[in-house]
Length: 158
Image (cartoon, rainbow, N blue to C red; front, side, top):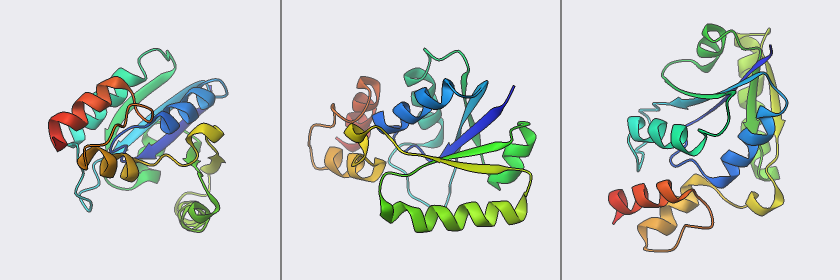
């Protein structure tokens, strides 16, 4: 069974993330959504809440699990017995940064492959940072995230 890891901060998990995960789940035996603690950022939602929300949003997928992690991604991927890191590309502007990450990960762990996926066109413009900004300014984010995420953002951001 081939295992893929889809890492990120998922602050919050969006419909674009869910779209990629659903499509990856059809192609891999197991998809691990790896939510990084990422203490270098100031998240709108705390780590435990991001994990709980992702588990709830993705509960319909039997071969998708959600795990939190800290430290190096390639070490987490090895610990999980995975051979693939999935990364999403929304726009050409994402490519340079993602290419650097993939190249560095290949240097650290040549046995792990990085695969890029693009979201459905309906979600190509949706990012967690835009969702957070819209929610913080009192805008409606229901088209972009699951209802439970909407409620969590309202609790956190007012």
